[in-house]
Image (cartoon, rainbow, N blue to C red; front, top):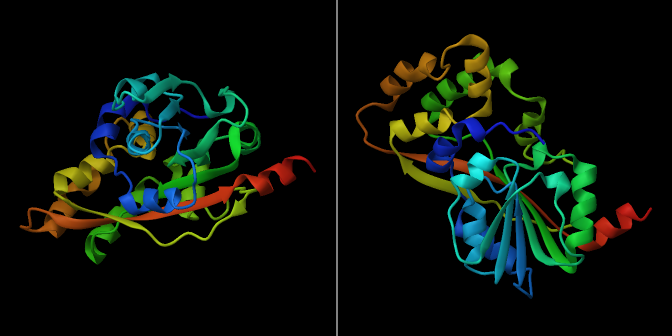
Length: 253
C-alpha cells in the first residue's frame, strides 16, 4: 500500500470531507450485532469515530503514523499503525469492516483474504469513498481543468478506481443494493482550496515541479466564486457493500 498522505496529515484532518449519517444508518440496518468494527486505512479516524458511537470496540489501522498522530481519539477506539495487507486479528472477529477512500491503494487479493478470515459469518464489508466535488458549472470546469489537464499525469494509476466510482474494483462478495448518497457542505473558497491541496497528485506535482499547481487556478476560482461567503459543495458518495458468504465461496474455489 502506498503512503501518499503523511506529508499533509494535518491538512487532511482539517479539510477532507466525512460521510453523511445516512451512510452509517444504512450499514447498521443490515447488522444484528455491534460488538467489534475495523476501519482499515482510517486516516485521521473520521469513520472510526462514527463507528465508535455504535460499536463496543473499534480497531482503526493506517499505514501512516502521521495520520494516526492526527487521529481523533475516543475511549473505545484503538489505533494501530500497520498496512492493510499485514493486519492480524482473531478469526471471525468483526461485525463490520470499513475502508473509506483507501481501497484503491490496497493489494486486493491479500487484503480480501484477511477480510475473509476476520469478519464474522454474518458480517458486513463496506467500501466507501467520494468522487470529485461539485459546486456549479463554472467552478466545476476550473477544478476539472486542474484535475485532468494540470495534474493528469501526476495521479497514481490507482486513482482510476475512484474515477470509475469503485465499480471496477474486484468485489467478490454477496453484494447488496446501495442507495445514492451525497455529502453537502457550505464551504468558503478557502476551504475548497484547502481541500484541493490535500490531493495526492498536488503533492506529486510539487515534488516534480517545485511549485503548487493549485495556485495556477486560484485567481480563476476567486473570480468565479464572486462575493458569496459560502457556496454549497457536493461530494457524491461511492459505496459498495457485501456480505461474507460469497467471499468464502470465491476463495475456496
